[in-house]
Length: 106
Image 1: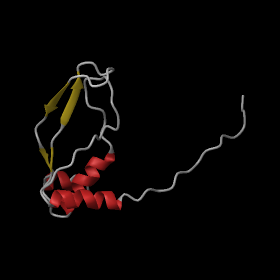
Image 2: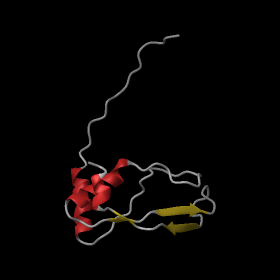
Image 3: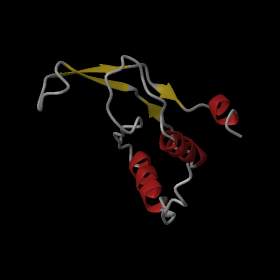
């Protein structure tokens, strides 16, 4: 049965230029940034699909001549449901944004 139209709101577009410029400035200064590109936590043993921001940051930095390496890090909690549970950090091999990788996005 049709119960009538559903009200919804359209959110305003958010301009991320300031954030991306801050990221590029940090990377140009040989700094590093930490991000959580999955956008949440889960109890699955595999990585969730990444959000687009990681790619936008890495490829945008490459376009500016900034050498970028992405180091995947897994956070695995002993008791994820308990506050301040012990955690193990697992680091993967760095992924370098190369010319070949950059060409695949064009």
